[in-house]
Image 1 (cartoon, rainbow, N blue to C red):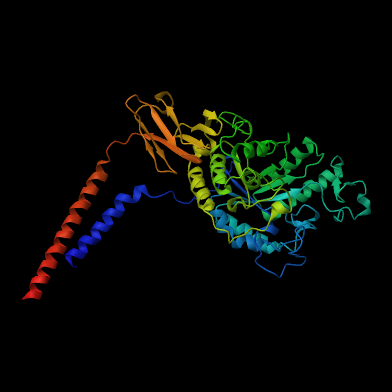
Image 2: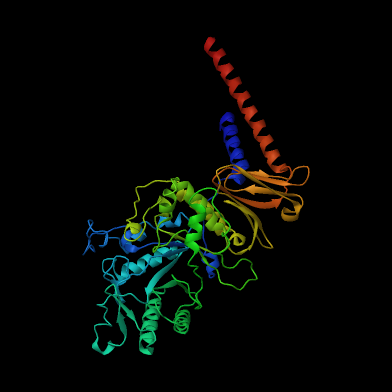
Length: 492
């Protein structure tokens, strides 16, 4: 091998070796877990996500927002990497039972899958793809507000099973033991047939706690490790709680800069690891609310920046982050069907990669998911908090203001001989002469600082770097000598 070529190869290899430790944050590599505190949920509607086949477009009408749009189960599978790239661990796809409404709520039969969404075979295929991607799949089970044409309602023997609702639908009489048994059997049969990972009970109506607990226990007896949650506040033994004020609180804090953030802790579930309280859903909006983009746009703010700041906070606060489909492309809308627009995959924005970066850190750190929480500062959008465990310590700085902000932290919080590594803005903070760590964060930025032991000089890195420089200089000298010889030979 030519000497110059050999040296150039060695130089390149050495440079690569010395820079490997400084690579940017990788995309999340999630692992299957069995504690909902470790999860994050991506919430979508099958009909409004992606249409991969026109063969099941039976009642599609693009001119009517209330009609089916054509999205199907295979379409979700086709675009699954989009969700995986953002690091979500649970895919929630709404109700998929035979229905008269695009959102799946007007259930006609709990025993069959809506033909416009796809087939049982396609659902199983989607479930397998989700599991291959180390994610879990959750399906909605509407307890009430179902179609008046439901198969149970058409049976004259069941005339006392339901009551008509004002909107032309029906609600089940969940005080009736026969109705309770039928609903529990329908839910558990579906969970067992497909071996799904989660069920969200929606439209609870007047269902009492005892009945809900019986259904929850039956589902857990049927499927080991299944999550059972609800879309509403309830005293039942759901794996996750819902605070009805969560969306209003977080929209009011993050829709603009310098907003009152005094209620940031109010929706939180488990704050400390020894607290037995179940975690809460942490969300900016839902399938049943106005979009966060609508709130920020009404403030004449740039929605993508607002979404980044808000989502970074959501992923680092204690609780279970739940994000509605389309948030990553700043989807707008006040109420359904406007807020349930078809997902536009042509829209390009860096929100997707940003969410992936933040979730990559969260998914790899048990402390950020389940560690203790301590609020260090909170004033009008400048929010600083600590997440800690026996193994790790993080300082999260949320600067949701219009100015650059700073906070000084002492040894009582950070400790001796430490340094703070900012993972999103690549900042390293060491103590000043007085032992104070000053964290400075630009406006509308969230930074995650990991507290580490002060490394001092990296001897191996310095030696490697010196070796690279020697090789590089040697390479240049050889090139110059060869060039000089070539010129002499040419002149002779």
